[in-house]
Every structure is written in C-alpha cells, then in structure tokens.
Image (cartoon, rainbow, N blue to C red):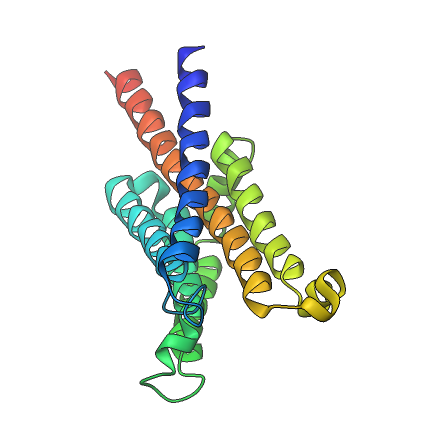
Length: 206
C-alpha cells in the first residue's frame, strides 16, 4: 500500500513539475519566443527522449535477457528524439537531413526484428500486461492526442477572430510534454521491472 501511495505522489509531482515548466516558459520568454523550437518545453522534449534512449541502452547492456527488446526500444526513442529536432537540425544542415539518421535507426529495428523476431516477441509478451506497458501506451496516446488537439482549424474555430497562434502552440506542446513525461516514467518503471526480474532469477538460481 505504501508503494502505491508513493507512486501516486511521484506521478502527481511529475505532472505538477511539467505544468510548472509550461508556466515558466510563458512567463519568462518574450512574446515571439514562447513555445518555439528553442524554448524550454522543446528542450525538455529532447532531454526526456534522450534520457529514455539512454536508459534503455543501458538496460540492454546491463540485462542480457532483455537486450533485444531494450535495444529496439532504445533505437525507437532515439528516432523520436531526432524527429523532434528536425527544424533545429535544418538550421545548420540540409532540409530533410533528419530523415537519414532516422532511416538508419529504422533499418536497425527492422534488422533486429528479422534476426531476433522470436526473442523480441517473447520479451514483448512478457511485459505486455505490466504497469510500464500501460503507462507507455498512455504516453503514446497522449502524444497522438496532442497532434489532433493542436490542429489550427480547431483553435481558429474556438477563438474565431481572436485567434492567436501562440495559444494553439502552447496547448499542443504542453500536452505533448505530458505525453513524453509519461513515456519517460514508463521507461523508468520498465528498467525497475527488468532489475526486479533479474534479481528474482538470481535468487532462484542460488
């Protein structure tokens, strides 16, 4: 029961911190810099996605039993991070350059799937009904919702002749940030599950 209460408090704290970050950006940055590609929220997107990729890469190294699944997930999060920074990359690199590293990562995922399909599917089935998978699905669902929630047509209909693009962008980017926060939480929870199961396996082997 105590563990459940602590987990609820941790998630509530995470949600509060992410909301506070959105407020910080709105208050701190100038009118033409709020919720842009160089703002605090976009930087947080990149930081959290990078953290997810690194945690999963470490899990793939630390827990050989889960190397295939963790490796694939790490590459997927790395691809999301690069895609998130497509506009920033295009400030210094040719237009559409982000597609090349993402394509390489996608090819790597396909190669792993073909080469280690049985192991990947077996590992995926083991975590399918765990808490981390539920949070992961909630995170991706929230990110998908943010895209539809941030449609220009919707916000123009809401605000009519008082339409301000920054309001639309703030809503979309903040909702996306919450989704990425859930993804980060799911990766941390998954890492803890890997560690717990390995400890149990080692205890049973004694």
